[in-house]
Length: 374
Image (cartoon, rainbow, N blue to C red; front, side, top):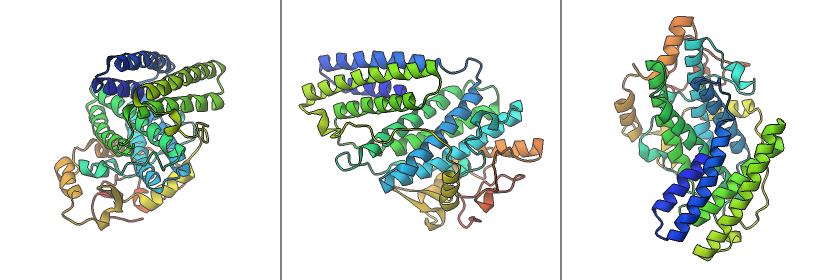
């Protein structure tokens, strides 16, 4: 969330004329930048770009599933479930690229917590931009947990998008470059979806307060579940820093907006803390029930419910055509050609019958009407 906070602070400053407030925001940003640098350097120095990518996608899967499983707003839960299946498929595509290019098995990186198998095929995830803009929550009516989770998932997906945007030009193979490019475009869709959930009626300083509260919540969650003593101390330090930021943001809100922090966060006691755990059964359930869904403006529908003239089909035709040369499809096809079948890590049969074949990539499910097979 440090990347999100820094970017948010810059955007607010660029639209703010009051010099004192611009300087206050600069002061906060400097501290957030220092936190980000320290966290970034906790990453193993020997970790490759692709290994780091597996970690990004595993986090996206398990974090999204955890938050969806406890989300109180049905619409927000549906948004989380929808994108969950897409990040789940990204993990599978990157894992096959890794296995084909380096011989590494991504199962050794995910620690047995997360299965690796097809989700909603990435080729089917390309939608018209209008269909990724969703209805915002109501910060006056929705729970504190919902507001936290919308902030958290937006920040997480934005960082993933930024990472892929930056890395695609540096990857060592042409196929890998194209895969990063393609999935970065899907992450853009996810950032649009989740970002559109944020209440637009909140002022910039109300959002700043919520940003700082979100960071304090996350660092305290990390502190409570961390087992490494040295890293635990970092989470403790950062939590205390964020508490100071939170108080500072509350002062700015009162000074410039004339509002008390309790108008934004009526009860500041943290809701249930975030603790990552295995989500295999939850993911399987969502896969079985919703894999053929797509976006239809602010809603979600089964693909077969769309009219033949709906934007999705024209967009798919223009972007993907017959599927030949689409990187996410080509990765699996090439893996099958070279190694006889795709790479997976699963404990039992795929919950979707149409996605069980190991010697053929399904590039029509969720993309071509009538191709259900579940």
